[in-house]
Image (cartoon, rainbow, N blue to C red; front, side):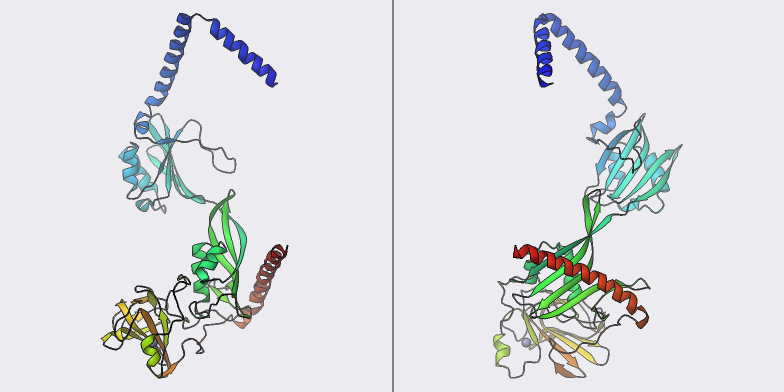
Length: 434
Ligand SMILES: [Zn+2]
């Protein structure tokens, strides 16, 4: 086969070589004229579009998707920062009348707020827009088809395939860095921290050697990853103590994370009122504060952290005081019902006012070194009926557990999920032992 092809090629070349030069030139000119004429006649209709560098795209025919009609020429445009639909239509010279028709046909497609990353497809025939696709993501788009002077819109969605992904790791320096080492995506790390924030103080409770495991969903379309889904289950093993969280959607559609016994992970207070889990081991979190060390009774916890680190309200409540004095510096006092109070001292900035209602994990200020303090840190106090308690060990009031009637359904979900988690754990242990 290859030999034959080579022979044919060699023969053709020798024939071309034998054509006298003037003849060859003439043939070449003829070919050029034919090619230019064909090309220009075809592109005349779309010269406006081409002038603006619209990308002429190749569309794959996919039987499972709607076909892109062959008689249309297709152009694609990406939404850029600062674009709106009108600037894009201008850019490729589509008439503003068509824009108006499309806008008025849009219904629930929010064309007033197109976003960078989204894309638009224009199907053009005889210099007129016949079809317009507003592509929000791989799984969602709106298709506008011309009907006389207006457009008909249809909304297309595709359900992505969900796969379970398993990751595990051991804490070396900080949880954040160890989770990164285990290739857990950033938004999943954030979710994990939030799920466990009622049980784990990510500053003081996490030690090197502690371990974690997680099962989460990843969404795919046509074999390409679309996004991460939900955290399905996760565990933390803190020096032998295992904390397990399982995602469960109740019959009223509300979603929460529960222990295998059905106890809500959510509590009225998070353990630590600040976002410190990102800080690496380079920062000495256990450092004793030099001034407080000399004070006999230290009635709170000190979290050494860089100035500007966000400080959250540890529970829902109302701001009783937000101000400054020379000992506390900038400070906030929050009342949570009549039983509980929390205090946040030495803040750099305060974002709340007296009497303001605050939600759990709402940002109330940032870490600073104001008042009686020698370095940036948050001094956090927790009071029960006016008495100071250790915020790290005090029993926290629990949120609603799974109701009696739903316990059987929950238990069966929990069993399936835990089995999946355990199987993965065993599998990866086998890999390690090899
Ligand atoms: Zn202190």
